[in-house]
Length: 249
Image (cartoon, rainbow, N blue to C red; front, side):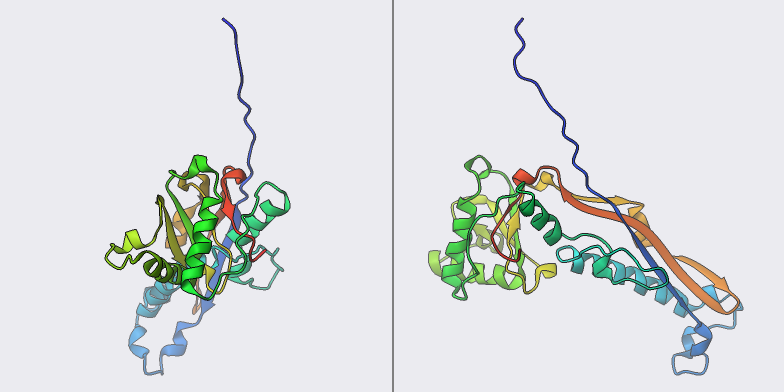
């Protein structure tokens, strides 16, 4: 028996950021308003219709803020007594990817700025995909970009290959790379960066993640408070499998 090779485990830190949501209000202020039907004669203000509506509104806003800031968020340590912006609650993908570029664990693929001509932009995206190591050409992967750039790619591909007859999902595939799809993301609106990685390499970690879907409701005299908190962290298992262009650094 002759041993050969070995294995090394290298830990990869994906920090979790504590996200807190707190709001307080006096529902009694609605009593003499035209929406007083959202109040009640029940002395327990937490049972009033407006409070139930408001708690649901906050939960929906949490989800919207998370989606909107997945790309551009950058953590800023909170100032005691001052509510922080949603965009400062955790590190988004732009900061994480660019930190990898700075650390030389991620090597950008040169594409230049997205061309305004759809046909040319489609060619730039194809050049980007060809820059991914050949080993991963058949690996299911989604190239993320702004919705505007994704639409521009679709228009350019349609022109270049006369692909109007294809299904929508096929139109968003990269020519000759059927396992690689293009997707537009609202969080990347106005950005010129594009990036992709094998699906199993991307991590969105939560601690107490179910708390993002519920609110604790308390009452103090006639004041009502709603709040929740959870942890979120984004990252990649292996930076070498993150492919991005040379934009929005």
